[in-house]
Image (cartoon, helix red, strand yellow):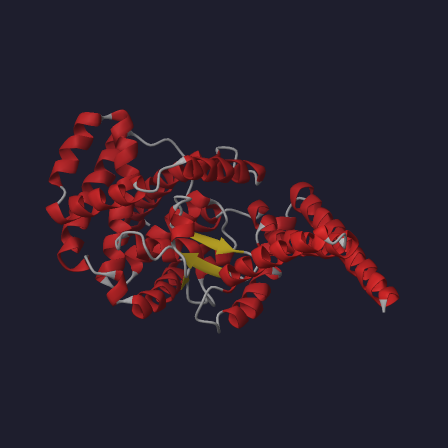
Length: 357
C-alpha cells in the first residue's frame, strides 16, 4: 500500500514537472517566435473557449470561485498533514497543482498577450490628437449621457438574468462590425462573495482556469454593463486592459438596451473627462456642470463605494496588478488603462471619415 502511494506521488510530481516545462516552452515561443501569439489566438484559443467555456457555462455559479475555496481548504488540510510529517505526498500534490495552474494560465491567457492587438484588427491607429478633438469627444459624450440617462438608469438586481444575456448580445452586435469579436460567448457570472473583488478595487475578473467572465455584483449599477462586456472581451483573446475597456465601450453603445448605452457613454465620459482635466481643467469643470443631476449622482455614488474599500489591501492589490501587467508586456502597467481615450478618439475620427469613402 505504501509502495503504491509512493509511486502515485512520483507520477504526480513527474506530471507537475512536465506541465512546468511545457508552460516554459509555450511562454518562450510566445515571447520570441514572431507571429506565434497571433496564430495561437486565431487557431487554438477559440477552440478552447468554445469547448471549456461551454462546459463551465452550464453552471450558474462561478466555477473558479468555488475552486479557489477548495484550494484554500486543501491547503489547510495539507498544513495539518505536514505536522504529521507526510511532506512527500504533499510536495508532489502541490507541484502538480502549481504546474497545472501555470499551464492553464499560459494556454488560456498568457500567450494572448503577444497576439495582434484589437486596434490593428479594427484599423484604429495610435496617433496625435488635439485638445480640440478631445474637447469635442467629451462634449458629445455629455450629450449622450444626458440623453441616455432618461431611461438608462436601471437597477442591476432587478435585471440580473436579462443583463447577463444582454452582455452576450451586445458583444455579438459589436461582432457584426468587427468580425474578430463575433462568435460564441458564455454568460458572465456574478461571484458569490463580491467583497473579495471590492477590497481589491476590482469590477470584474477573467478566469483563464475556467474560461469565465466574473464580475462584482455589489458595485454601483451603472458600472455593471460595461464590466460585463469588458470581461467578455478577454474571451476573444484581447488581454490588454485598455483595449478591453474600449471593446466594452463599443459593445455597450452598440446595444439596444438603454442601460447598456448609458453605462458605455458614462464610462467613456469618465475616461475622456479625466484626460481633458489634465490639459484643460476649466473646460472639464464646465462640461461636468453640464452633466444631468442623475449622472452626477451615479458618479458620486461610484466614488463613495470604492472609497469605502480603500485600504492597505487595495493598495497591495493595485501594486500586484501593476506588476502583473508589466510582466505581460504592458509596460505602462495600470496606466495602460488610459490608452482607452486614444482608441475612442481614433474611433471617432474613423467614423467622421466614413461618409467620405
